[in-house]
Image 1 (spheres, rainbow, N blue to C red):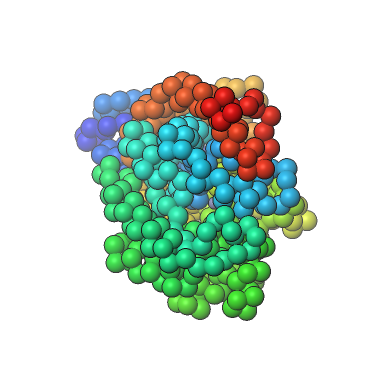
Image 2: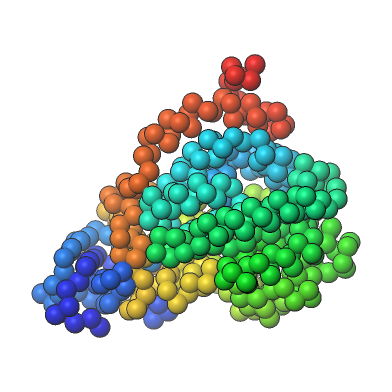
Length: 462
Ligand SMILES: [Zn+2]
């Protein structure tokens, strides 16, 4: 416990605290004391105990660890509403893969800002972002003070051909994307006093060859960066790898002796038992994107991953970025799949969205829990809302009834990122207005890719 003689930087007092420390489900009338960006006390209020430069009284709020998004593409907004209702996952290969090369840099920059705003306002304080507009994402991290891990895609196929099953390897694409991935990682690693770190992102198991995977692992480990990929995310990928190697995608990477604790594998939706066993044996982090798959009528084996002991945490991927909504999807889908309401508890869902996801991205000893010695990555959730009544102080009350829009404040390492619902550093109305002027143009692009839009024709494309 911190000493009252040491002046605190920040003292947060709230009606409820959810420390997610595996010990107390919640603390009533509690406080969190912060000094030099670290938590020095979590517990019941100790009136007149502290000297604090800044005291924030929140008698109608709950404090919890900032949400950690262990796999996301914050700037991918443009492909929303393309795959939600169509044939399972097909639009990923047709619209998104083909469209990403056409989106103009200014549009990526606006979408990165909006994506970061959306996540910050939802109480996400750490993003493990991958793929689109990494430099714009890095700038948004600098502007807002969010914690971020960055990677951009590396691959050696033409993504315009992949939808038709053509995986011809192209060394010039490999060279260009690996160089770019390394440059992005070098540019951002350690920025903002270490709040921004880098990973290399071999795109997916089917779009990256064995040789390129090996180069990525070599480069990442030589530079102290992590690794991030999509694994067992589609039947097309799994069928392709099985045909080629006779193995599941994770098993294949494991047999190549490439996996380790520095990896984040997203999805594992079509992984088999052996894939999960290999994932556990190599201590990879598993980013569980709960809200992505139920719309296709399938769901990853979360219970299997947890029971095997794989480091597992919440991810949004890209469609829905409300952690509360994602936790509810996770709970309902896992229970439905198991035919058992005991398959996942509300507290376990909260753990997956905070402590578990921090473990996945390699920060489990630093964030994801409100615990003495941890960095002060904290969010406040307003409880004085009609849909939150009555609030009984349980994880059930919090997880089943709160919404992203109830998050009012957040701090990263004790510094405010979200204050009374506003994110400092990015002008929200500017970003929204800028996007509005591009809507018809983006709609035209989506139409050209065979996607779904009812936007007006674009004059500049006519
Ligand atoms: Zn993804």
